[in-house]
Image (cartoon, rainbow, N blue to C red; front, side, top):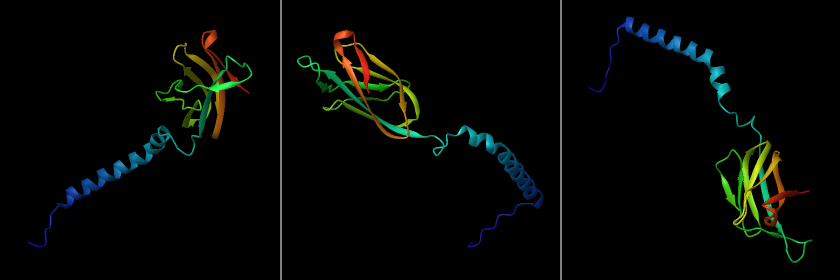
Amino acid sequence: MDDLTIAIPARRFRSVLRVAACMAVLLAAAWPCIAADQPDAEKTTRGTLTIDVLTVDPENKNERQPVANAIVRIEGSEDSRETNERGRARFSAIPTGKVTVQIMVIGADICRLRDIGVTAGEQVVSVVFDKSQKATCSRVQ
């Protein structure tokens, strides 16, 4: 019993070949539609966005201090980051385009910065958060 042979009738074998050929034709015809639905990693440009959250020093209005433990989130994403001791939150692999950034600091309302441009590569955006005026924030140019 070293040699196991399965006998397939010729008529059945031809039927199987026809079905396989038909499926190959259908798949070849449908492939452009299937491929178009899949995101192409090479076509989607992504970038890295670092948000620096700062606040004005109440003692010296010309100085800014980092805000640690603020929650930073990009609208439309479930992902959020907590700022480190330097007030930084870093997001990577963000599709290029414009995003809205939400900043939440304990004891203040949510602040939104709209139309932050994300480009390929890495960029840093500095934001001054002012808790004294109902959570306003502005981008540092």
